[in-house]
Length: 137
Image (cartoon, rainbow, N blue to C red; front, side, top):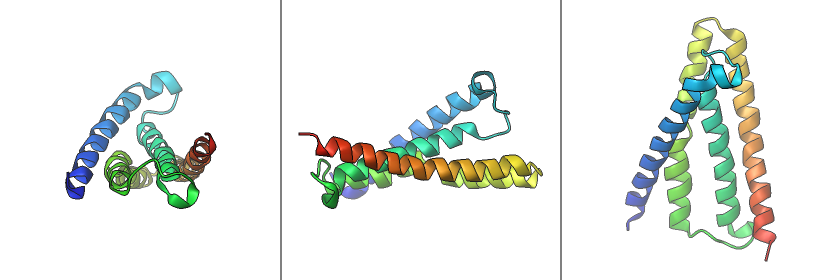
């Protein structure tokens, strides 16, 4: 199967997963989490989880980190295709801008800080867990 086709399939699967997870969380966030309905909590969860997945995938596919469990063409499928379609930083950008435009300054700032801090931490956590799993016999 060609690399481009793998990327396209991964992107489609990631997009469908993002749409589903974001929809479920957004529909229930006020009831389940107590967050205001205006805050893009579904997008936040998708981005943090996508960052975690990218960390795990890199840990399993980067030769300098140990055994390579994922071939390069499948690495592209997973990172560029699946995670690229799944993570929603374009949605994050427009939603943050909308919050600012509506003068919801605290929620806009909260979205920027929490999304970035948790996203970076999730990548780190994915790398650590992936590295730990790599080291196991």
